[in-house]
Image (tube, rainbow, N blue to C red; front, side, top):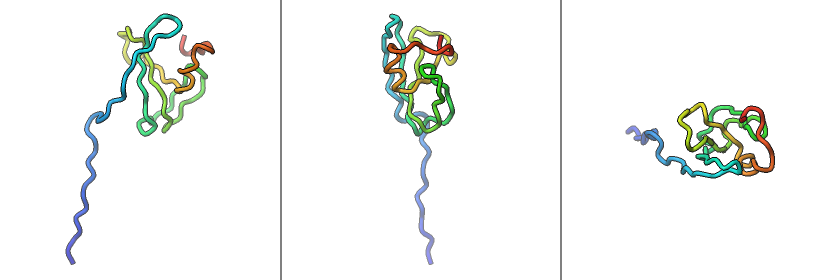
Length: 97
């Protein structure tokens, strides 16, 4: 009996569909770069500065940092999408300020 050929799955190289970035201006007058993170790419636990709750793995959320930041990774914060959308109605937790 002949062997059946099973096609190999190829792993994607790099970021095939980079998340769209956008700049948002907050009520504080500063510009923020906002990038969505798909649930499939969320693999770690983060703490949302808006509600101080955990963002669990496999949960879609946003990564936000000041647009004029030169600090890089240290300035990024992971937010629940709804917390970021309603951030002006509630103050940031101690972790963000």
